[in-house]
Length: 262
Image 1: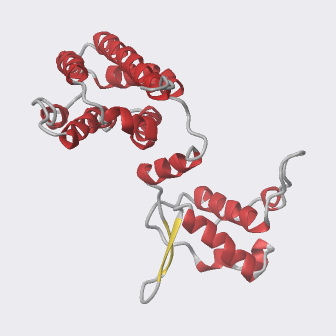
Image 2: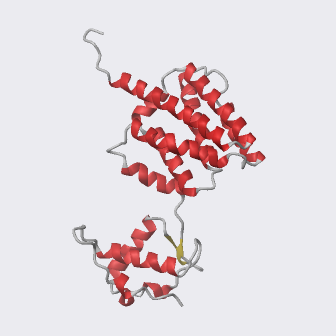
Image 3: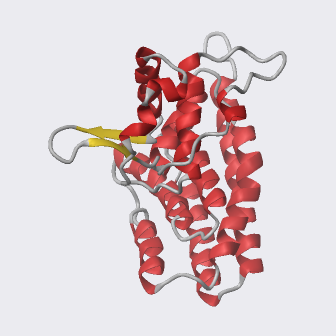
């Protein structure tokens, strides 16, 4: 038998000065709290009696809207036919990152904003993985480097190699045992991939940058294998400082006004 939602939550008013929330949003929050309070996990069915509109003090139309909100958020899924019903679902990191990308779609952070975080996040990610990589995990990191060891022969290949350098950092997040740290790292990488100015910079030929990246990442692999978190932290911080310097310089060149007649 599911727990009843505390009456205080069912009638909770918005904080003073905040925008008044719509009734379907409030009902969606109540259902979410019920899922948490009853310890349901992804794949578990939700009892039909949870959706009695009179218990939730909502009309059927409001309840339908609340369920649509939860489904859009990725917290429930519905199935029809035999064995159908409404089931608990889970939000994948990729889904959450896509929503956050959309949050910054029209007011994008600057490259400096991103690297202010990367200079802290990436060294901690590297340090957290030191000495903990399985043979398969180590091989996965090495395989991303192999994608850009050779000189590119076309502009398209060079662009693919630059993205592969970001893949190295994303692979690192997959082996971090701190889920929040890993998620933040992946989100920052997603911003770099999506921002127009970054895409333009990545398409510029720069063999020296590729060599610098390889140098840092090969050193990092050795430190990871040796299980030295402080060395990993130092190498990655140096890598981020150099990357930020390059990205800011190239961004400044791209926005610098051309001289008349040039």
